[in-house]
Amino acid sequence: MDYDTFKLIHSELIMSVQYIEQDLKLVYSILKSGKFDDNYSNVENAPLGRLLKSLHEVDQELGYSKIKEKDYELLDRIREIRNYWCHQCYIDFHYIEEPQAHEKAFQEVAARLHEDELCVYDLQQKVEKLRKSVEKKNRHKKSIH
Image (cartoon, rainbow, N blue to C red; front, side, top):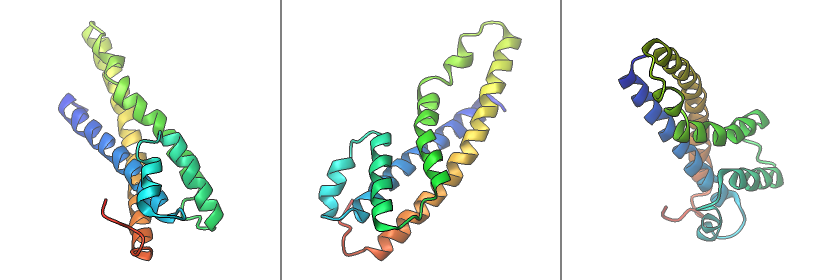
């Protein structure tokens, strides 16, 4: 993989993670009993771990179970994935001065990027589909967000 492709895929991965987080906040806010705006305010700035725990509880209470347990596990890993790609990935090759070692390290990070991007993209598509389904079934509760 070349560097320009890496930057593009990296950006798309971060975009997908952001979509996942926002869609989960919306799904939670719709499914949780009470007013949408109040529910959204409770998770708007919540860390992803707390959001996932809250969503899982609501999902269990409602018997909704549209998110499979293996997807919850992957959603939990999203935190680690996001943190790596936001805070560490470039560090893993940037400071290596020897050209061959730099390229080898870059290609290792690029391979990881490709794996994570595919898995995150698939999950993002599932979560988006869930959000659209929940919104459609609960149009009366959703306000403008």
